[in-house]
Image 1 (cartoon, one colour):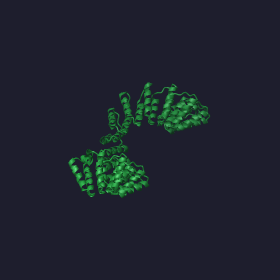
Image 2 (cartoon, helix red, strand yellow):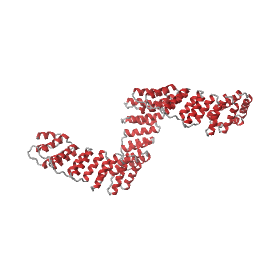
Image 3 (cartoon, helix red, strand yellow):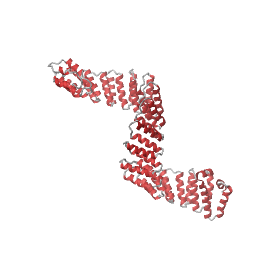
Image 4 (cartoon, one colour):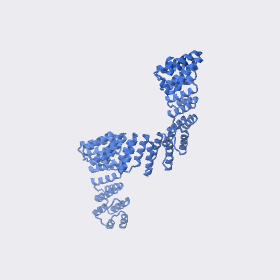
Length: 638
């Protein structure tokens, strides 16, 4: 046995005398206790188990003192299972177990994050009539804190009160921390108030834990209130409490308050850490305060605090929200220079910044850069790049990105397709827009109002009124909401196709669907009627616009006058010209909007007189225009 024990403890550095004592036939329990006390934290489970076996073989299995020393050694070495085993074997030997030995086992289980074992031991103590004291409950509450079971921690506090076990600051701190770890800020604040009512002194640890609870619960106001209480009670502020308060402000989008706290920490003796700086940068990021976020990075460097990837990511996102694409790219270069981890989220923000700034070429370069550095590009990355191409009408590049996504096994989503269809719409490529819609249906990607509206607009620009109406019908079947933009595009398609009847039917359908009808809507309908020479419908629509207090523009009158011209209604055309001044369509407005449109109105009126067999009226209009020198005076003369 001696050689075996010597070999077992040779690694852990325990003196060779431990083994020599086990060679004797009779062992002094005090000597065994001393030997257990020599076990260091570096001892392994097998070494402890071997020493335990030797103790049992020496007939000391029921000795409480030996068991207590052995359990304390297990506690130091975080061997909770062995501690429980020793307790059970000691109890089986009918030894009288006291509070101290149970406390040691409870502490060992707590260190091993075995809160369930701890609660079982407490129940066992109660059934064996072993008194639980403050030390027992403190260890148990700490076990619940590390295990994240805040409700059990509060139950244990209630048991302490019920059994009249004295509460102390350490126990309450553990309970507050248990609540704080899972964001139970109400319970944490309540515990803090109870401590004051029980005349228990709350310290920096207590308050920091309560503020952390408020931070996790996004309760910035409560966090700042607790910080104020610390100052009022002369409780020392530390980096943890202030950093937690800054994080609470960040979550509540209170970036000015976050920067105020950071400034306070900077001006005081408190040590600023990466957490405080990163949280402040994130607070600025939420509101797009990119200049302040970049300033925080500069301040970190001057304070000898190494900026981490989180701080940089927040600053890049702030630049994205603030539209500072050049600054975002500069920060990205800094990340590479500092050899920090370049993550997908950070790169996504930079690509999105380029998209917002219309820098599609920079966005494309970033995609290539991500691939070269083995940074994963996801749907969000590609969406931003496709949108960048869409904004400048680079539909070919946008479709190329879609193909790249497919080859890289990156899924499309509705946003991706929206941007691609919009790119096609900008260049009037209605066929490609419809092809993309078909691919969305085949891939079971939900079509949105934006997608369909862009496709309808593409058909309108391509003079494909029938396709536009088919898309509207599909939207009804698939229950995609149609809005004013969708209908306006379809109406314009009908107008360009001289389909006035379809345009009027759409107008009625808009009314039945309770879709808002605006000036643009009526202008398209009036223009459609004008193209078809349906002067009566044009004038009815014009009258309805006037009665509905809608703004009548030069476009509206152009279309109506044109309709009268085609319908040989010279008198009505002349009256429309006279009405323009009464609707406050001034000469300056007409000239600025479309100078040639005024001539177009007069030309249409003259044409109406000619086709209506009124040559003298036509000559009179021309004479009046020349005599008055301005269109406005000419219309007044009419």
